[in-house]
Image 1 (spheres, chains in turn purple, orange):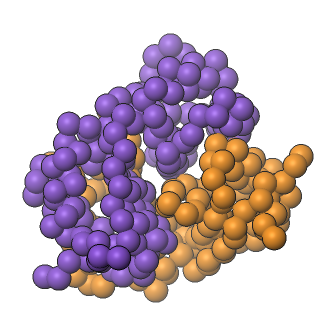
Image 2 (cartoon, rainbow over the protein chains, first blue to last red):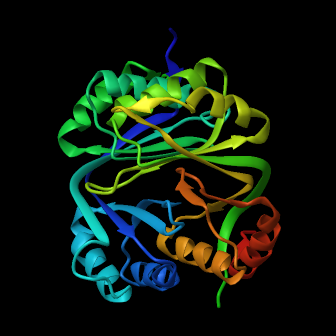
Length: 159
Length: 156
């Protein structure tokens, strides 16, 4: 099967995943905390949000490991989180970005990518795909394996 | 409040949001969901998958409504680790994509604030390299779009 052409595949190590399970009252304060991220010049690599069975928000932020301590404190204090239970953290992850001209228009891109990663035993911690790119978070120790796996599915045409 | 300049704002209607809640089985389970969808030519306009070390992950798919029945037909009744998939379908859904110029935390902050001000619930939020996309109830999307114009302006 022909490889899927993409513009580029990038990998950034030293990323952390921070997952918050919130109630609706606390979720109202998220914009203020994100403005504080801006003031501190802390980038957010990507962010995902969905609702749990009860309709309460689950929020996942991917950010640089070096910013994790600050981010953890900002959410803890800004949302008045209890010391346990509402925030989970996974450090030492790698962010892989696939950037292509057509990912949102071509069925099967995510399927081929995930089949290859599954075959190579790469755990996917978080995934976001729409329009023209796919962001993928994997454990740091499997980033090389993930990149090799993706190179079997995707190719970057020479400039 | 100073508006943030952006490259674009797009609204897309006639979607459904299909959710697979607390999906166990890791990447292999994800692949087993995506493979039959790809074989049937189903185009996923929005994909988000996230959880935490102890939070079982949710998989969120944004599918055009003319492909919803086929999508549900392919994933309903499937099992992972002996348990049937827990599937929820929210519809009708619409999607707003905002194309920012960097400065992501402030953009996300304004994006969430606009939805809150418009009293529009975000069903799911995801990122691509160039855009932030949110799914919500279709009839409320125009209202969110109006609110977003109070927080953002097109560059140039």
